[in-house]
Length: 230
Image (cartoon, rainbow, N blue to C red; front, side, top):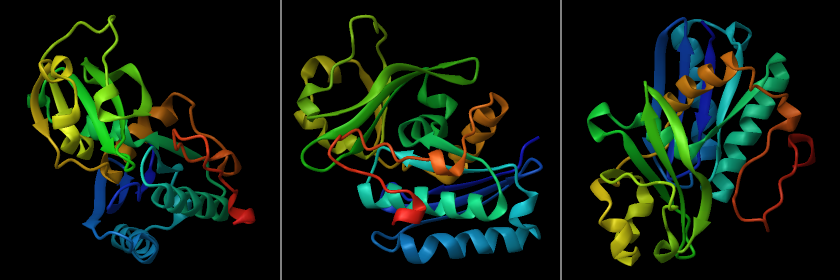
């Protein structure tokens, strides 16, 4: 059973989680623009509470986006720095998948996750829960709310809408909204879900070297510099 430290600063929320020998410890707060001050102290608190150092870990996971450009840079850079210091691999985790993972079983089989992308756009993707695992039905993308469309190959109805992007529901098409069951705008991407997803990814051999970690912006005009270039 792998031991994972997960970090997320992709939205107004800041969180860290430690999955250690099946035990989960976490810190979570919603404090916009304070992530740089909060994240590493959260990590220190978790490690101290567990009584371990970074050398007890198998990997460090981080919310790689999409989300706030500045936010996902913070988590990516922190994960790189900690992983390099401890000679650990990193596991990038989708923020949209983390929201879907955190949804309750009662939320249904079909999930449509969306985050506010600012600039009158949303980041979104669609998922199906199959035997406890998430299957992506639609690739992650960014577009205007009115342009969100499920492809013809996705015929299911009764999607549960999750995430802050659904504040734009009134701008979305009537056709799309007719396929939505319940809506939960209160769900943030959280490190807790990312730790569990990272454990699955690590078992599948999907960890990467810290130098290969990159944020996922979905907007092409944003460049990323490695930790030693920042």
